[in-house]
Length: 95
Image (cartoon, rainbow, N blue to C red; front, side, top):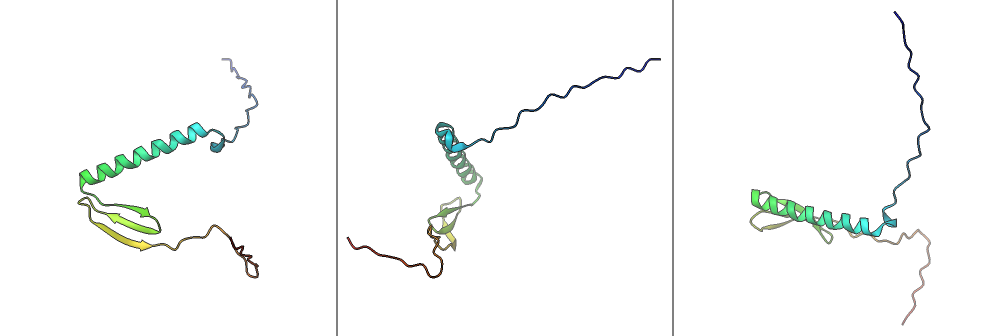
């Protein structure tokens, strides 16, 4: 009886490139459109099944039932995009 050993040759793998979504604007816009369609379909299905769904409206968390009743669940504080540290001097210019 003969034993045959197989040699496995490993090729160097290519490094995976990171995908940056901002570089491909068309792909990003297609993903946004697909997300909006999926959300509208989910809302329609929830209404057909008589289920409530929850969403954000401004700084409020709102729950809407299938018959159209809107219930405000929570209010979130608005977040500022400016980070101000203690001791920062703010200058105001008049028009």
